Amino acid sequence: MLKHVIAYAHELMEQVIHPGDTVIDATCGNGNDTLVLSRLVGDEGKVLAFDIQEQAIEMTSKHLTMHDVTNTTLILDSHQRVDHYITAEDEGKLAGAIFNLGYLPGSSKAITTNAESTITAIEKIRHSMKPGGRIVLVVYHGHAEGAIEKEGLLAHVKEYDQKQYAVLQYRFLNQKNNPPFIIAIEKKKKK
Image (tube, rainbow, N blue to C red; front, side, top):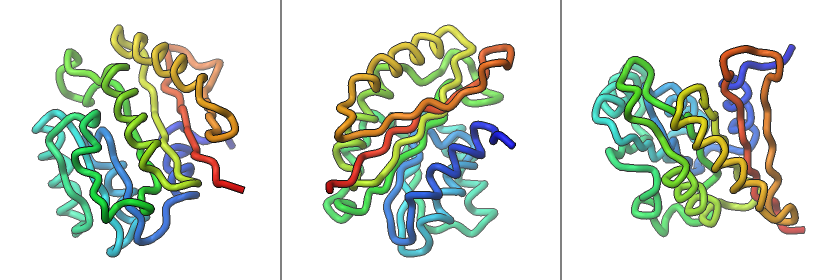
């Protein structure tokens, strides 16, 4: 059976994240991805969870508290400033990042991710990521800014050198209403 995009996004992260790793939830939203990541890295690992909305940080904090999560740092800031939070201690341990793009469900649809900030974040993360690490983007493009972001992201990642990065697109073609899809970027291991 084909997996829903969120389940497949999590599976893609599970394949490369190990206990003790550092990972990034670039858009923590309501905390579901953050919780998945925190379990994957374990007590010795670290999750940096970003959002620009205080409401998202509060919801994620409550969600993590309910599950006794202590390995996560919640950051009220744009993911494009991720390099301000990656420390020397994280070098060689950054296994990847997940992005759920678009707007916070149940919140203002006027506040969305955008191609410029997302591409800036991806660039900073991919250069700090260890070989074999992955960036997984769940792209919601059924709104005006989302359609622009989708086109910008696809154009950008198509330019990555195939000798250094594998880029995957996973999408359902026969669903209506612009279903979300995945872009996954894997940093290849040196041979």
